[in-house]
Image 1 (cartoon, one colour):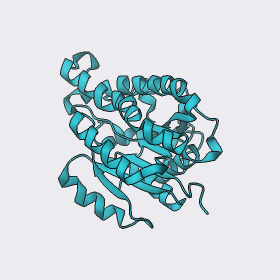
Image 2 (image 1 turned 180 degrees about the vertical axis):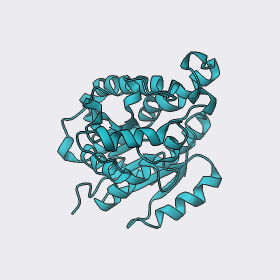
Image 3 (image 1 turned 135 degrees about the horizontal axis):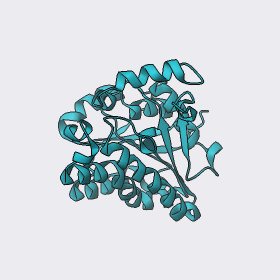
Image 4 (image 1 turned 135 degrees about the vertical axis):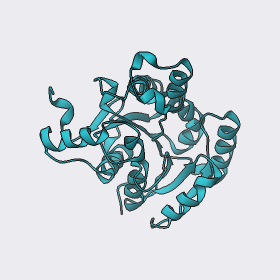
Length: 260
């Protein structure tokens, strides 16, 4: 019996085998959870289906574009059909996006459209999706919502720019959602992961330097992996964290406590 046996989890944000969301999906599968994963557009479905063959349980795959209201409505309807009376126990929000030009140069030069895009996809999508999933959580009697953040929310990380602002909004959203939903026994937390080799990290200039900094200067001189994040997510999804809510859990070898 795994820590998540009998639980159903929705994981949004698996892009490829290097994704943080994929590390979480693998850990959930290992611990016995049944999975439902999403893909943004049809051409991504084949890649996700190929990855899913590595899991012990066959997951449900559903389309979802968080910036499209019609797509969201179809997703919720399909989710209700799949989950039935059981509902869902865990929701993993691992999506973020910003225009590449807004991750270069100066934050002061961020465009209006770029700012709104980053905030909508990276921050507003958390309360949006959580609200849409509330009936499914209620059928399960509560559960766990978790999202992914980064230390750029509270410290200046060159070239992170508008994503740092979006992550700050995301972390604040975690606290307000935790307050709103606590009486429904739905807990809401964030994992602040250290630098890890993902497609998203490759889009940020200086990402390799951040990896080097963690391995050289952190209390634990070692870079993290998506597996490490997955293990932390298992804790937040399990009953072991049943009274943990509104928190940001750092999985970064302790780098966030350092003054440089």
